[in-house]
Length: 141
Figure 1 (spheres, one colour):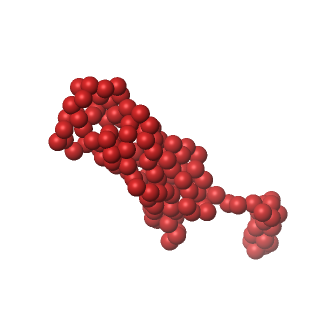
Figure 2 (tube, one colour):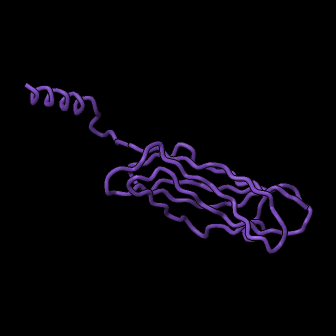
Figure 3 (cartoon, helix red, strand yellow):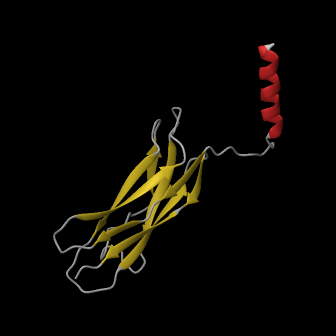
C-alpha cells in the first residue's frame, strides 16, 4: 500500500515538471557596504555579505563569483579591486560568506565615493537574485 502512494507521488512530481525545466535550489544575493575612509596608514576594509536562501546540503559545493568595478571610487586610488572574477564556494552547512575589499585611505577633502561589487553564478544550481552590491566610502577629511 505504501509503495503505491510513493509511486503516485513521484509520478505526480515527475509529470508536473516540464521536460526542459532546470531546478535551481539556491538563490544568491550580495549586500551593500559602507565605511568611513580614515587616514593614510590605517588598514580598513568594506565588508560585503553573500547570502544563499538556504543552507547548502550534500557534498557538491555551490559556487558564485565576485568582481569589483570602479565608479566615483577609482581602482587602486580609493580601493584595491579584485583583479578578476574570484570564485567563492559554499560547502555543506554554509549559507553566507563575507568578502572584504581594502580601502586606500588618504587625507584629501573629497566627496563620498562609490564602487560596485558584482555577483555572478558559476554553479548550475544557483540563481542570482541581487547581483550588485554598492560600496560607499564616506569621506572624513
